[in-house]
Length: 199
Ligand SMILES: C[S@@+](CC[C@H](N)C(=O)[O-])C[C@H]1O[C@@H](n2cnc3c(N)ncnc32)[C@H](O)[C@@H]1O
Image (cartoon, rainbow, N blue to C red; front, side, top):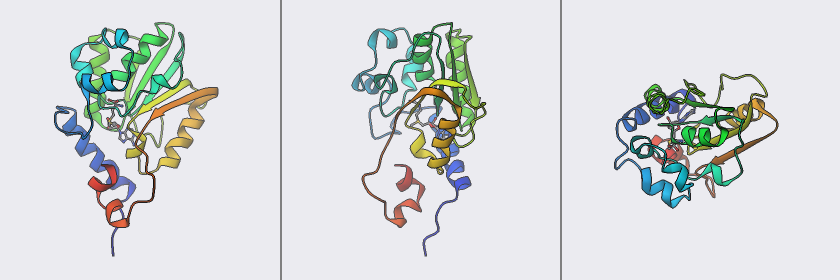
């Protein structure tokens, strides 16, 4: 009989893997990351050009949430699974100082990295917290836009994560996310193994 991973086990494995990735993403992904990744995904190059190399180098998103709709001046934005903070900095570029950008990440080392990123750019209207997508530490109707880039697929409780998005979005708000999707169900022997399940 194959034992399924529990939610806690998945979180623990994500914590271990992304704590390591927070020190270096080199050779950790099967797709382009850093500058190569964001060039391939069509990020706004004049915006990316204002961001320090170290923050660009931490980018490991799978798509471009900003290609799905606008982030406006003054918007309140949340980035779920913010990693090293690249998309938080990009969102801040669009909201300006009139807006506010929050990033959350399950992994303390990643949240520390994102905090260092926003501090290095002196972005006082950005804030990073350690939190899980399944239990967002925000009131109902908080955000104009929620973005996420390559994080929801790592959640063991995706329906709960999506209901948290719905709860914390303002009426009429937008959820713009890029993620990994399955075309079909995976065999149990793959879902029971973290590498198969997350890779
Ligand atoms: C592939 S990385 C993408 C990071 C970032 N969005 C980017 O584009 O560079 C996935 C991120 O999601 C975070 N993560 C995974 N599961 C999570 C969860 N359940 N709640 C919050 N963050 C999570 C990981 O710690 C990691 O930083």
